[in-house]
Image 1 (cartoon, protein in one colour):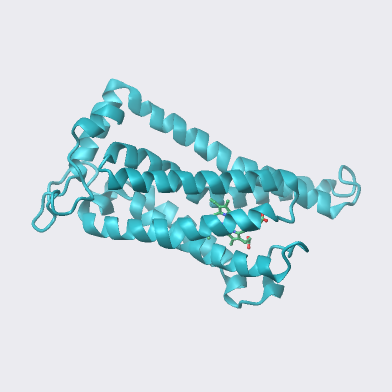
Image 2 (cartoon, rainbow, N blue to C red):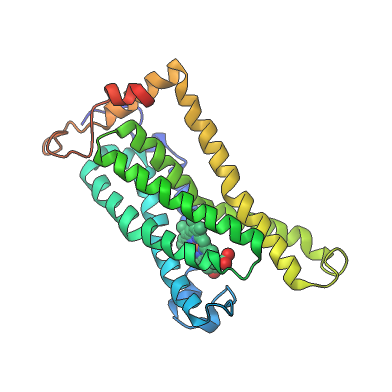
Amino acid sequence: MRMTYASRWWRRPWIFPFGALVVIFLAFSLPPYLSFDPVRSRVPQPAALGVAHYWTLVPHVFFGSVALSTAVVQIWPWFRRRFPVAHRRIGRVYVFGGVLPAGAAALVVGSFTPYGPVTRASDVILAVLWLTCTVTGWRMARRHRYADHRRWMIRSFTLTASIITNRIWGAVFGIALAPQIDTTFHGDVDLFTWVVSSGAAWLGWTIPLLICEWWLNRDRSPARRRAVAARLAADAPSGPGESATSDRDYAPAGRDAQASG
Ligand code: HEM
């Protein structure tokens, strides 16, 4: 295997803090749902759905955890280049065992969220975007359009990881606005919860997606195009048993990379 800049694992140090963040997020988020006891849910049951809400939320949380954990590995350039066959297999788990079921469940729980119409709008739009970016990324890989695959999967990854920024905004708004419950919110705790949730829901994914689009558009400059083309070329497996033709998950950077990278 060629040693390129990105094929050295220590050259992408952001992967370790990001992986640690995912572990911390899951360690905090999963436990209430491991008991399968609706009383321990952190989300109140909306009357319109009753207990069905909980039994949609639990699969959402479990499949969402699969999406988040596999996303860490999939986005890591060193892993992609070192283990291209595993990248393809884990990619299928990410799409079919993570995002698709978690996103479908999110559409349901999001449509009946107890946190008000502003959160509802954000939840539904995010779920649709999450499913769309992921399915498009998968279809691009199937068609061997790897530069487009890369762009759509970076968007999908950004939306998957936005669940973490959502929780950070929730904590920021909660701490900042809690002293005003009795004044600005006239003691209405439900209104306070709606406002905190709405702010966290919208800022949680719109800011990362805007940064992602800005970052992807940097690719359009000639210098970035050349860099991306070189990276996609490095993605083409070269070791024994990793033939780009037998393992159709990778294509050399050619027309595809230069056309849209
Ligand atoms: C990116 C698309 C996602 C959407 C649209 C979404 C949507 C939702 C919705 C609507 C709820 C119920 C709360 C509410 O009514 O607002 C919820 C709860 C939850 N989601 Fe997601 N979600 C997404 C991604 C994820 C991911 C990747 C995870 C990773 C584990 C996750 C974990 C959770 C957890 C743990 C809860 C329960 C609330 C809590 O205990 O903090 N979600 N999600």
